[in-house]
Image (cartoon, rainbow, N blue to C red):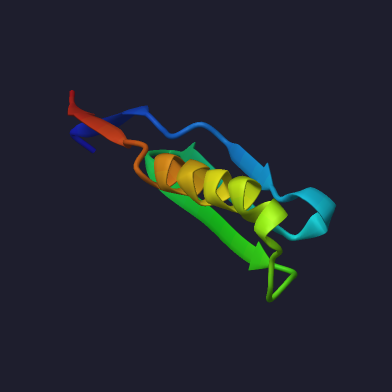
Length: 75
């Protein structure tokens, strides 16, 4: 009760070309209760060398999203 949530990570949706995979990150604050939803889904088990750049950027964006801060301050 003596703390308040001042910042949550932004909603993130990242997908690979050709429906190769997706990543979703959502956060909500309801009455100072933080709910975090994270889904990582891979639809392919192998990728060609031509898809490597997109796959690498996909994982880089996931790392950035997961390193987002939740800021809680004392009232």
